[in-house]
Length: 188
Image 1 (tube, rainbow, N blue to C red):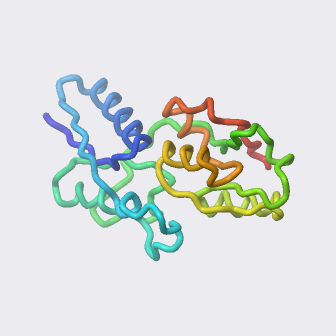
Image 2: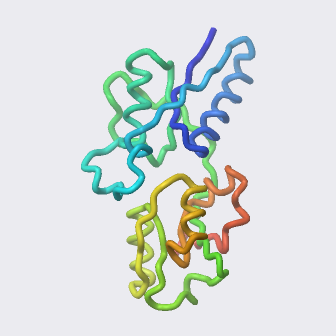
């Protein structure tokens, strides 16, 4: 049997889909598992803030459509991108093992969050992280940053901000944990 998994084409999405493929192949060695790369509307528009899209599922709906129209048998998503209500005809069938829950503080200068100068720019693409940062340090400027992890790290290195917050899990999964200045405390 051939099983087709739909996934976004970003490096982190492909890591997750490859992990799912490896687990499925181990459970059913006789089956062939193929990945179908899909470009989501969130991938196509790299400039607009996510909250301004005006709809939910910007990283999942096109991938889910591949399942619903028969091009794929299942979809692999990052759980954080999924909507709370799934499209009719779909169900959450399984979840990969969770990675570290902590966020990563990344500062090329090595400066810690508490030592960052007032007015310094900190980049994130997450409303949650922006709100938490503003609660901790209202004197900092939060700047929106979009793109996959490599793109964001390149923007940071080019001076888009003095620091950035990303998920530790994504950095670790892609072999980029060496960029982490400090894992942020969960309680904080």
